[in-house]
Amino acid sequence: MKKQRNTLLKIHPNRRWAAFVAGLILVLMTELGVRFEDSISMLVYSAVPEGKAVSSSASVEFASMAAIAAARGLNICPRDLALLCQKVENHIVGAPCGVMDQMTSACGEANKLLAMVCQPAEMVGLVEIPSHIRFWGIDSGIRHSIGGADYGSVRVVIYMG
Image (cartoon, rainbow, N blue to C red; front, side, top):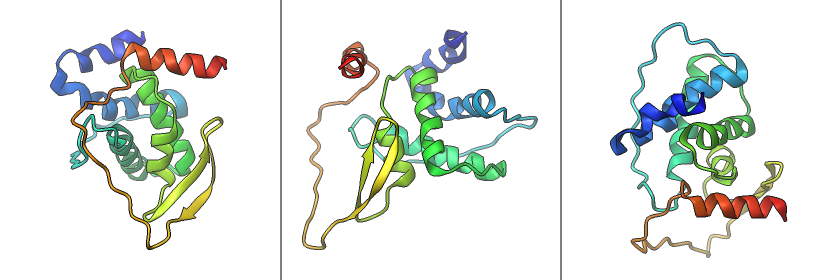
């Protein structure tokens, strides 16, 4: 059944991002019993570069999930939204990711670091970044993907450890 749910979204590479957004609707239906009787019109725009290891999928998922939840009048806490977004990546997109990127998108704040425990997705707190400290990201030009077999194998080994 899972194959049928995501096959159409993976046929063409240009539709790959559709799985991240359309998957949210399926997860809301299966996990929370949300019913979508009417159609949904949604414009998704992002300036976050794809495949650069900057949580692009998590940020698009969370922003889209928060918008859908608000439009439907759903009161879902940020942590639970993050966990629902992780289910989209794991079960619809087929990426065996952890929850850190989704938690950061859901619970992070500007100019602060998010202290968390990834298992069981608990936020410890926010750490203020001193004003004299700066962070830079450097584009190595290497594409990042969590959809590969190696990533999944590493996650299995970590859980077994």
